[in-house]
Length: 356
Figure 1 (cartoon, rainbow, N blue to C red):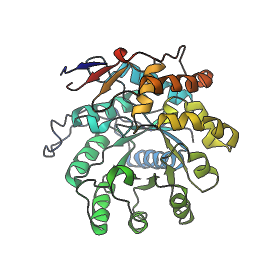
Figure 2: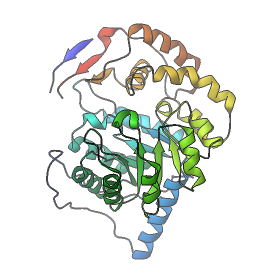
Figure 3: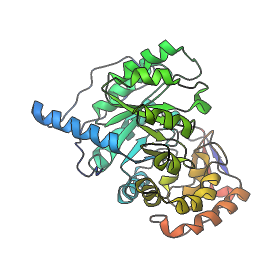
């Protein structure tokens, strides 16, 4: 490995074309955002907002989309666009931009908001664009979320404050503040944040008009509990998503595997197919044999869907793991859109970027 130190149908979603104003640091003070958009009458704006909310609430398959990179470590927009084209063609209804899988944690806010803006401008009429603009700082989450809506994203994904954990009243205040900015999904993944979002917090937030639901990663029992209370949940676990959708009352999935198999995951969410789900479990397990997004990054490089470039601290799966993965990927090769060859790749084929 070369270590481098180089610096519902959503086909007619309402979309705004706006310039992206930079955020030169994650702690920069708010500033005025200039937005250029086609003005709508109040009635038209109301209809657009309602139709977008309905599309968000009814979405079943949402991809936590990967961010591909060029050899210099910058974002590879050409590969990103090809990936999103295949998502739309495969029946995926929306994408999370700059989430955990998309490595928003490795971007500065300039890159992050640029990528949201680009996604809206190119795909905003075909895909729901959900920007991961959450933060463990309420001030930072508000700033980023405001910027995301200024460039046209349809909704935000909001994580609970990690590392500097807060109390239940603090969680309610934090989420309430970002919900005031616009439609949002709450993201509960205690394995990453170190803190579970208690049911009572979600119950208090559920009455907010901008509350869409929860991306829930703690399992299907929690999803069923929320579903029984009329709260929408999207499973964050690819291996459990079919059961979550068809047995436990879940709305759908926010998926990693659908980067590779958008058509199959759309089928799994649209109608029960236990045989298909069972056939994919070995591949899903391999994709998560190391912390996400290591597996999907490796797989997409092996399939030629992205260049074999990793931003540190992520590194590819081992050669032995790649040999195993190649067998699993070849078994579903006909369902990998645009893929003509699957290569194990040598260690030296990968570029690891520390500075970009």
